[in-house]
Picture (tube, rainbow, N blue to C red):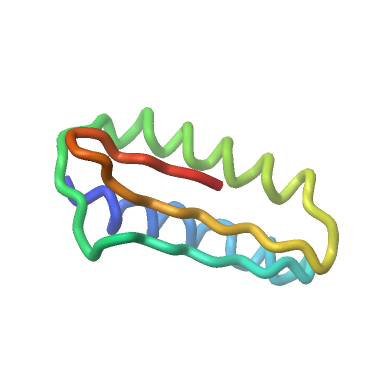
Length: 79
């Protein structure tokens, strides 16, 4: 599947929480599409956990960025 589209949908789950804490919240994909097979349920758990923790440990005025890139055969996510 298209991991950029999938991860942007997960990212949007937390936008309101970031806004309410006055946290700058950015999604930065390197490409419009990164196509590879992945388990949607497991990746949703992983991404939700990462973003939830980022919000939990960020203060007002902080910035959270989610970068999605590909490196050959791998997808690289950084928050």
